[in-house]
Image (tube, rainbow, N blue to C red):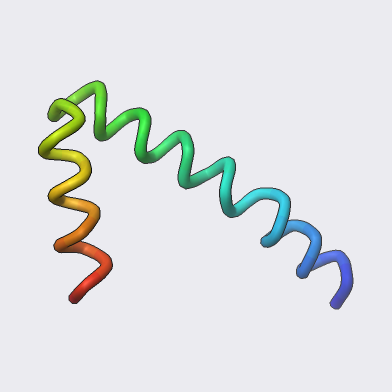
Length: 42
């Protein structure tokens, strides 16, 4: 269980960094931020 916790805590933010960077590059920073707000509120 500790291994799963460590993988989530260590890997989750890095995965989000990659996804946000990719979205920001593809759609532009304003669209990526607005889309993230819509995604998290649903």
